[in-house]
Image 1 (tube, rainbow, N blue to C red):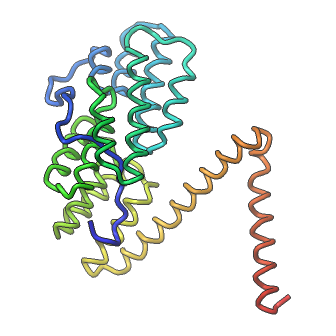
Image 2: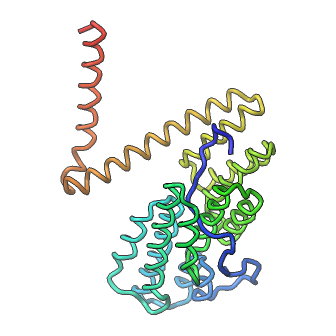
Length: 277
């Protein structure tokens, strides 16, 4: 990938495990939709089915939340969300799902350390993926690390087929298109990713790079500034969460004032060093 492009890298093996076919006829069988990884559709189908088991509803809601957290690459929170279920209804193999989440977390960490071989080995342990979009995205990223862009693109394509909302896979496809010189295709893919999550900083940044390549400097600057703002919001949210875990729940409501205090103190010190105070 080009040096300016912010790549999303965490992944698995090229011999991807079997995933549910996406060209199956539409169905309102909530159990089948669950097996296919279409958790929002499964919950909606369950709600109109006439069944009223709150434990099933809670289980489906947990799968929806976990899927979204995986798209965000917040693997620890995904594991915690699953663990918060009071009762594990019998429509899913929850222990297997929990083990898969831990594998995805470990393989992502291996990719962050630029160790695609270890990530590939870990992901090979997933035999029946419940989160195929994330699995395929990580697999595609291992191929990026190894320089196999055609294989990576095929895996990212499959990820978007089984999970059309997987905005990281869409962004990665945009990165490959940009590297290939297909700037218009890259812009379309980044815009598709941002329709799913308008606050994904990588897509904003890379969209800015693509606009710059087309000579559309105003659009480039807007996208790059948006990337900077969204990245700052992500960092503040992460800091607030980490501080909350460290200092306890009562600390959270004072976080904003503490941050403002740090800004004021920092400004005072800068002015003093500059000789204005």
